[in-house]
Each structure stands twice: as structure tokens, then as C-alpha cells.
Length: 384
Image 1: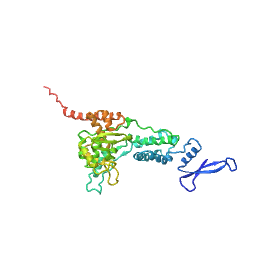
Image 2: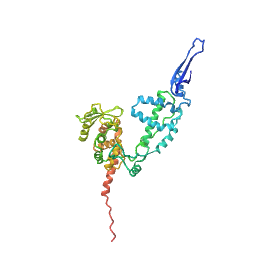
Image 3: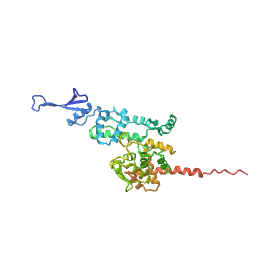
Image 4: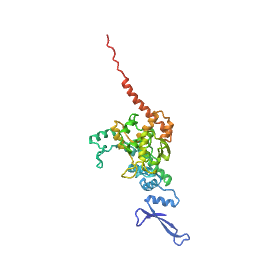
């Protein structure tokens, strides 16, 4: 057997199978099997036809297999996961694309990790939008400069860990699906290293203030779903009418790993908002649709930040902070950890137990306020 380029089709090859010489008893006409892909892939397929193990020989690079990997990944993974995988590889390819998969070593990952840790995430300026008469998100250059100082941060170890996990998926695919020999899998960061430093949650008094300052309509309803019911961002944004049982005052939520849980609707305000959002919709309809795309919204981060500023909340605001605050508030209210696990949809109760650290930090900060008013400076008496 051998291979040769296809004479007319770019990216195609002929795998040539010879069946003996002319005149011999075993002679058959030579077969030409067309194959689309890189030369390395064509050679691997040719060896597979011969019943041989894949021959890396330092010839197959990461970039040679990406097209086939992405095809497999798109077929077997959820659209959101596939989109995140593509974004991760755009950052990984400059460092690992030309590495041979059989010779990958942990030292090959270190330059990528070091550069990502040094990368700064700078917030975008909230520009005025022409399609609005009044845009409450627009900010001046001075306001933007001030916000940059407060919000600019380095890429977190947790983010780098997620990107490396996608590369691990690629290596497992090479090894298990394609039967290639692969080198070292990347070593990431421990769970302790991935924990965000100085992580905070909303104080009990800040939760109603944030909801009150949030825009009326879908933004406020989604905020209440995350803050008062602990829904994840995607769970709240993709809620359908059939998931809302107003008669029994509860939500039927399907979260991670297609795990379904029942969550009580906590407040009358949320009950009323959900009732209004579902009016005129069919059971399968999404409650919150972007009128431009006709698809569910993907984020309400900007409106959350604007509402936090109006409420005087000086903390880093993001979607998942709402869920953190819900779980912490429930534990502070005396809800058992096992019940909070079910409400939050945590698979492992240890995940819920980690939120007790937030309670300790919150109580420490509140206790400091008490100390500030109770401390009395005693002036020693003057000597007689």
C-alpha cells in the first residue's frame, strides 16, 4: 500500500492497494481508495487498512487533527460546550498547534499558562447606542478610566484550567477514538489554587436594593430568578412557560447533566412577574426572547452592573454572584445544607458546604462594624 495526492481535488488522496503482479495467480486490479484529509491522516488510514498500529513517528501535529476533532466534538457535545471549546483552542493553538502529539510534555504547556496568567482583562467602555433615546449604560471617558482601575484583572487560574480541560478532551479523543499515541496530559491547578481571592457575596440588605434598581421587565424577572431562586444564568435565561407551575407555586428546572429539580417560587413579586411573562405564550415557548434574534438572551451582566451602581453596591457584579448570594442567604437563614443542596441542584453536598466560608467572611465584616462603634478610647487620668 501507499498514498499519493489526488490529481484534481485539493486536500484529497488516493490510497493505493496493490494485489500482486500481472500474471500471478493472486493478481487483481490495483485499487484506488479516495480519502479527504491531511497527509498525516491519510497515512494513518492507510496503516489502519493494513492492520497496523498508528505510526506517529513524530509526524502528526496537533493542528493536523483539529478539523476531525471539531467535527466529532460538534456532533457529540452541546452547542454551548462546542462554542467554548473553539474559543479555548484559539488561545491554545499558538502555543501547542505545531507540537507533535506523541511528544507532548508538561513543559510544553508552561509558556501558555504563564502568558495567560499575565493577560489582563480590561472592561469595555459602555458606549451610547443610537437606537436608544436615553442609554443609562453610556459612560464618559473619565468614568470608564475609573472603572478600568477597579475592574481590570488578570485571567484567573480557573479560566486557564477550563481551557486546559478542553485540550485534555482533545488528547483523549486522539488516544481513545483515533488510537494514536499521545504524550503528557497537561497538569492544571489544584482546587485551592483555582479559588478566587477576596470572593464576596451580596449582603442581605443589598439583595432587595439590587432588585429594586434593576430595570423593570425581563431583566428584573431574571435577576429575581437568580437571586431569589438560585437559578444558574442559563437556567433563568432559557426558562420556558411549561417550566413554571403557578398553581403549585414552583419551577421545574433542568440544570447541569440534565438533572431536573423542583424549586419553590419564593416571593409574590416573582410569582406575579412570571405570570405576566407567560401571558399569551405556548407551553414550549421561552419566557424571555430577544426581539432582534428571536432567541433567548445570553446575558444580563450590563444591566446588573448598572443596577448595582444605582443601588450603591461597590462589589464586582456578575451573573453567578446572584446564585452565590442565594445559597449563602439561605444558609444564613437557617436552611439545612441538605435542603440548600436540593434547591441549588448541587450533585455533591460538599459543593454546598463550601458556602459556609462565605458566611464566616460575611459575619466577620459585619462584626467589624460593631467593633467600630463599641470601641472606646480611654484617656488615662493625669497624674496628681
